[in-house]
Length: 217
Image 1 (tube, rainbow, N blue to C red):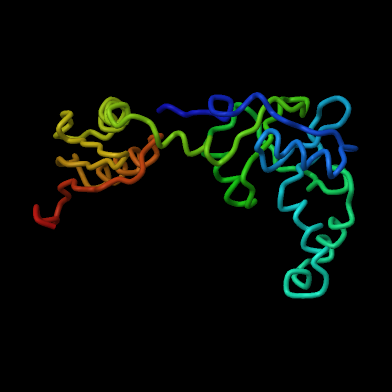
Image 2 (cartoon, one colour):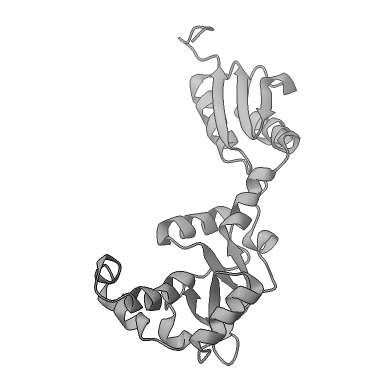
């Protein structure tokens, strides 16, 4: 089955900053390039951290003085509110990923670590790109006909369906509907799982005829 990698969807033109970049410099560059975070790199271009708008907002929140906004700041946030350089503000170590990793792995990292983007590094930890949530979600723009073709040629062919003709699969807006009669119930369940893992599939509607299931169920 097709597996899109991070390298296929990442942005290679990345705006990064050095450890000594000033707070004001980062604000200006954020506005100039319309971005919300920077990878922070050392003098050799290796990623050592990430500075986001959330990190920088601590300063504005702390300036508000006593009150609900300031009181919710954690100790680390108070430390960041006094920071004046990227090195002081950055989150380190950063959550990074390699270009050969599947897009699904990038999505898991973003979900589990609650980050919106991942710096992409090579084997020497040098910055080569960045991948964000929008890049990861691009796989769901895959054409329905491509999804249908893959389901027919790979998933169904391997599941030993008695009815394995193209009419056994329909795809609309990424939602796959499966019909037909599998060789047995286990083969049917395996087919559903194979199709569910095809890239671009939003959901699978299981309309297969299992033993003991009536046609109108």
